[in-house]
Length: 133
Figure (cartoon, rainbow, N blue to C red):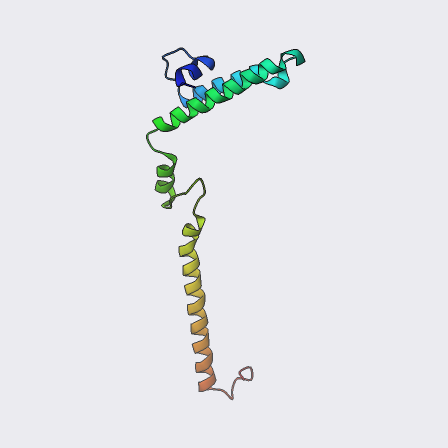
C-alpha cells in the first residue's frame, strides 16, 4: 500500500503531511469506528476487512515516519547509554561488565589484604591471641 492511499484511508487530505501523533490519533479513531466487535453480526465480515486495511495503512505510515526521523532509535540509544543495541535487545552485559570487574577487584584486593594481615598478626604475636591457630 502506498502512503498516499494509506493517508486517504485514515482520513487525511491527499497531500497533507501529518505528524506521527496525528496519524496515531486517526488510526485509533478509525479502529474504534470499524472494530469487528462493535458492529452487528451481519456486517462483521466487512468490518474485519476494513479493520485489516486500516491496520495495514497505519503500519505503512508508521514505517514511512520511521525513515523520515532525524535520528534513528539506535543512535539515540547509543547517545544515552554508550552501548549499542542489536536486534532490539539491549546489551546489558556490556553495561554491567565494568561494575562486575570493579567489584571483583575490590573483593579480591580485600581478601588479599585480610590474608596478609592475618599472616602478619600470626607471625608477630601468635601466643597472645587465643583465636589464631
